[in-house]
Image (cartoon, rainbow, N blue to C red; front, side):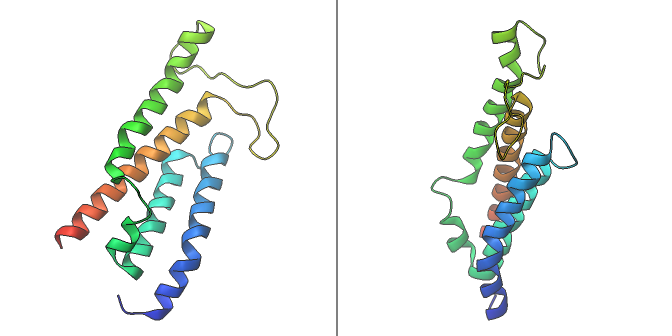
Amino acid sequence: MKSIILRTASNYLLPLLLLFSVFVLLRGHYLPGGGFIGGLVASIAFVLHAFAHGLRKAQRYFPIHPGFLMPIGLTLSLLSGFLPILIGDQAFLTGLWMADPLPVIGMVGTALFFDLGVYIVVVGVTLTIIFTISETA
């Protein structure tokens, strides 16, 4: 796209949308949001940047292909589900929480790591699909 307004705006919107996606991710286990919506917002940030600057420039933000994010996120989600079995002798996907909350994040537990895994999977799947479609077009 040749719009200087879109190119300039996307330079400012990319970090803001990524920050907003992390905010949505972190508030997800207390209020609406979470890994899925946060991952979609992060993907939208990169798609907007690809529309404004071209696909090659957007792909430079990823040292590896986004498709490799999918198994990483799935592994993180599975490990967060199996952690109560391994540590606490409890059922699969039972929430384990730290004793003290962290200053900005709040209570950290296995639910946050599960959401983080979902976030990574959604970013990987969405960007793989969009980048693949854009390459063939």
